[in-house]
Amino acid sequence: MLFKYINCTFISIWLLRYFTEDLRFSATYNYIHLSEIDKELSYLSIQSKNSELKNCIHNTILSNPHEISVPEIYDSHVYKNVKTGGEYWPLDCNSEFSVAIIVPFRNREEQLKIFVNYFHQFLQQQKLHYRIYIVEQNDNKPFNRAKMFNIGVYEANRNKFPCVILTDVDLIPINNANLYACTKQPRHMSTNIDVHRFHLMYRGLFGGSTAILTEQFLSVNGMSNEFHGWGGEDDDFYARLTHNGYVTCRYDPKISAYIMLKHKKETPSPDRYEVLRTGLQRFRQDGINNLDNFYRNVTLKPLYTLISVYN
Image 1 (cartoon, helix red, strand yellow):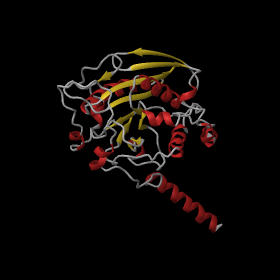
Image 2 (tube, helix red, strand yellow):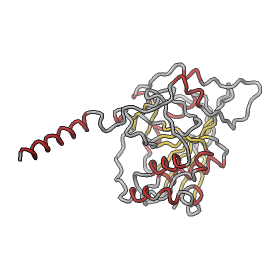
Image 3 (cartoon, helix red, strand yellow):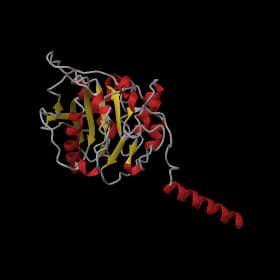
Image 4 (cartoon, helix red, strand yellow):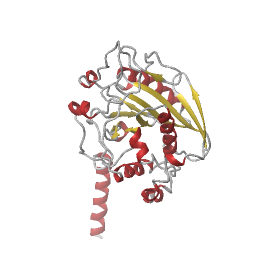
């Protein structure tokens, strides 16, 4: 009886520490220091060069990092010269980075307004050539986030973008030095999120916001189309990358800080573990190369390119 009491007490104390301390999180991990970011960037641009202009100087942002306050996220931001379809390039210099921002979406209109309003000014301050793609799933089936990413990258590749940022609509970067450009290796961007107490959940985490060269994404056949509902697709994508020899990276924790916009939590898919377990057996046939069974309609909105998907 005494043993049972001691055992229950130990478990209770451990659970208390689990939810109040940092036992859930990975306390340490390797990352690219702020001073080394410039060396690790992949300088790829499809912007037409103006011979009268110099290249944009991006390391000025890296040399002066600062955090953005939470109230600023919801302000009405100033941005200009956005082309129809949500594309922008600086007019005073030649950007060294061309980036497609891919956002899977369904029934998050209020978050989308905040995201688009914030990101145009955020990306313009970084002197990027970019285009925002919103990939909307238009049906009542379980949300297939990974498939929306595949379709977004498919369209971005048609537009020759060499770098893609895969990001959820509810994740907002709050450090201006979190440069939305690709590194030489795939990068997990949203390492430290407020709802996770600005800690990394586990070292193999590769979800939320990620940056990857388009050719790297295509080389692993993108993400699996078999994850219907919440959970599992990011871990499967990480397995694909590591299986094919890629070593993922992260920025300094202070740089990779994010705020998550409030939203209703999704119900986890009961099948996700089985789909994840068999992922590497089918990754060559399951991904961006088997998207034939969908219909998409591409509409150029004033602030983004909307890809409507009907499964």
